[in-house]
Amino acid sequence: VPLPRRADYGPASHRPPETAMTDDRPAGPVPPFDPGKLKAFLDRLSTEVHAADDWGQVATYIPELADVAPNQFAISVVLADGTRLSAGARSVPFSIQSVSKVFMLACVLGREGDNIWRRVDREPSGDRFDSILLLEQEKGRPRNPFINAGALVTTDAMLANRAPKQALSEFLGFLRAAAGDEDIHIDPSVAASEARYGFRNVALANYLKSYDNLHNAPELTLGTYFHQCAVEMTTDQLAMAGRMIAQLPGAPPLMAPARARRLGALMMTCGHYDGSGDFAFRVGLPGKSGVGGGILMVAPGRASIAIWSPGLNSYGNSKVGTEAAELLTDFTGWSVFS
Ligand code: GLU
Image 1 (spheres, protein in one colour):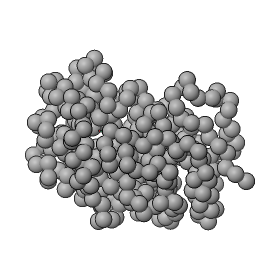
Image 2 (tube, protein in one colour):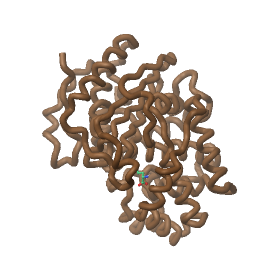
Image 3 (cartoon, protein in one colour):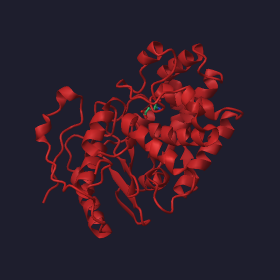
Image 4 (cartoon, rainbow, N blue to C red):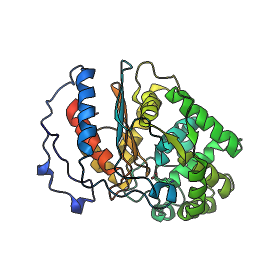
C-alpha cells in the first residue's frame, strides 16, 4: 500500500483546505513500539520519497549549498530503549545550519542559565529567519533564539570570557558529547562562504550592537556564528545528539530535564520560522530546521529523530523532510498532544 501523499507545506494561500487531511490516529496512549515494523516503515518511506517529482529548491545564498543535489533523503531514529534505526543516506554529512542554534542555546543555558532571557525573548516571530523588521520595533531584543538575530545574541553570550576559537571548540565538544561521536567537524569552506555572503547577518549584528545587545565586536560574534552554522553532521549523529532534548534514558547528562522541556517548547513554537505553526499542526512534535535541509525532532520520552533532504519549501524548511516528518508521526502516533 503506498504511503498517502502529503500536500506541500507552502504559505497558507498555497495550501489545500484542512479537510484534505486524513487523520485516523486512534485516540489515547501510543502503544509500545515494534522496532521491526518501524524499520520497515522507514525503508518504505525512503523508497517512496525518491519517487517525489518535486524536491523543493536548495538554498542558493552560498555555492556550497547551491551545489547540493536536491534529490537526497535520510532519516534516523533513536528510541527510548537505545535502538537505532535509519534509512536512506544516513551516513552523508550535511550542513546543519540553523539546527546548530538549538545546541548553542543549550550550551549558553548551561553556562549562564536564565540570564540569557534578559537579552532575547521567547515568542514566535511570524517573520522570515533573517528579518530585521521586528528588531527595530522591539528595540534590539530579538523575538526568539532561533531567528538569526536571536541566535547572534546567543552566540555572543557564548563568547563571554572566551575567544571565538575557544567558544567554538567548547561548542563542538558539547555536540560530540551529546552525539557520543568525536567525528563531528566544521566545514571551513562553508564558514568562509557564510562570511563572504552573510550581508544580512552583518546588518543584524550591527543593529544589535547599536542597541547594546551585542557585547563583542560584531565581527567576532559573526565569525563564531558563521562557523557554528557550518557544522556538518549525518542524520545518525544528529538523532543521537537529540537524545538529551528528547530526555531519553541513557542520554548523556548534559541538560536538566526542565531545561530540555523548555528547549522543546521553543522548538515547537519557533523551530520552523514562520512555518512553525503549520509544522506543529501537522507533525505535532518540537522540531528545528536548517537551510541545509536538516530537521531535528523530538518525541519526548520516546524518540529522537533526524531527517535530511536538502530541497526547501517556501518557508525555507526541508520540503520532503517535512512531509516525511508528518508521515512518520502519522505512522507512530507520536505527538506531544496525545
Ligand atoms: N547560515 C544561515 C544564515 O544565517 C542559517 C539560516 C538557517 O539555517 O535557517 O543565514
